[in-house]
Length: 334
Image 1 (cartoon, rainbow, N blue to C red):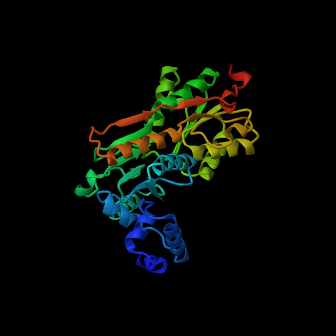
Image 2 (cartoon, rainbow, N blue to C red):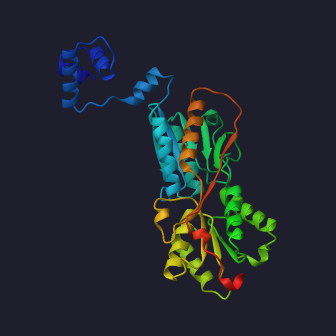
Image 3 (cartoon, rainbow, N blue to C red):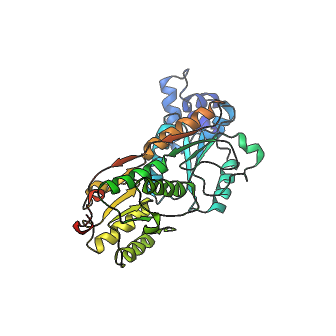
């Protein structure tokens, strides 16, 4: 700032007024300062400014997501950033790669950077590792509820969403269903499995007759599992895929085997161009844009000092019919 002042022939206070867009500077002087700043490639230090003027706030929020490769998490990031940007708050995001050790490492790194709040989807079984002094930091958990600490959470109604998928496939006449899912050690997966099983029970369908293929962590592993299932002695007439990357793998397997119009499929999680598939993908939509917006509103409330008791906010899921979930069972099964 001193260099800019020297080049423009003004005092440091005048430079400060110009870069902070404050009154009391003539237009001629303002333009001279801006020209000097541009010539020196001067950038206002937002961190120093915020520490000085906003009660040591850094105007930044840390965002920790399991995997940026998942479209669901990308949409949450976008919605959260849009809301916080309108309040002058930057989002610093990182991917956990579904690694519990990485969660602790990155979370502590954000704490060292003195972010004003944290928004995260937890991977570790407990967040009790947080230093005691940091537990007063505004935090909002998304998609999964925290363990070991009290904090706000914004989650999907996973069990109800999975139940809707099962009920829909059963209503189409299917009794030979299959469940394909991802990790079994996370809360969302357990809730989806629970909702699916409960709906089978309501319909009088024994889970002993239903294959549950879980632990599928990639599109390729899901593709292989689906191919093996569909080419086996007792292939299902309908599949529920409980995670979006699993859905992609099942879709590929059905396409490769020419069964995309012979086997019904409902996936958990919507995605771009899902209506352009052949047939269009019937999905349980979580509306990540609503989750991101709600999480942004909660973290802003906490940053602004609101002290209400932590609570969990549940975002309803929506079953969207596009064709794949409406494929009927073979006439022989009727």
